[in-house]
Length: 190
Image (cartoon, rainbow, N blue to C red; front, side, top):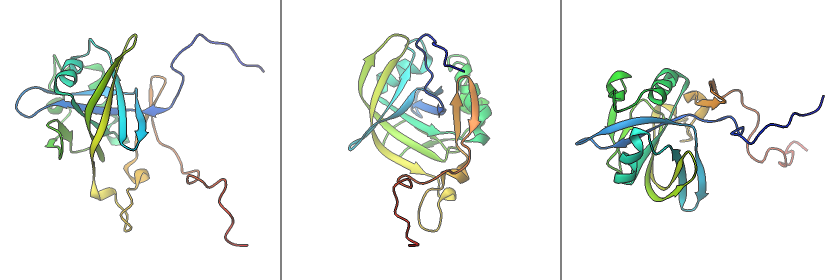
C-alpha cells in the first residue's frame, strides 16, 4: 500500500486540549477550549494560543493582555468539550460546568481549581493569520496541584490523566514509553 496525497490540513495530532480562562473577578470572565497551543521558547518561557477573532474570548484576551492555560484531564473531558462548543456570550461556563474560579498568582484572570496545572500568561504579541490570530505570551507563573506531586517533588502527569485532542476526538494520554534521552543512555549494568 502507498500513501494518499491530501490537501494541506491540520494533521499534526494529537495536541493538548486546554481550557483557557480569561477576564477577571470584577468584570467578565470566560473559559474557551483551545487545541492550537504549545511552547515557543524555553528561556524566557513562552507559549501561544490561536483564537478565531469572532470568538467571545478573543476581545477579552486582546484587551486584558492576559490569559491562563488550564491543563485538562480525562475527568474534565465533558467540561472541556462544553467550553469549546458553547459561547461565553450565552453561558457562564464556570457555573454551568461547576468549575471553581480561583485567584492566580501573577495575572488577574481566574485559574480553574480543578485543573492540575495552571499556566499564567502575559500577551507579548498578536500575529494575524487566516482563520486564527496567534497570541504569543510570556509564561509568568505556573501553579501545580500538590496532590499530583511524588515524594521527590516531581509532578506526576500520568497520575493527573491528561487529555489530548486528535482530529475531532478526545483521548487519554496513553502508556509510558520512555524518558527523554533513553535512546542514547548508556547501559549502567555493564
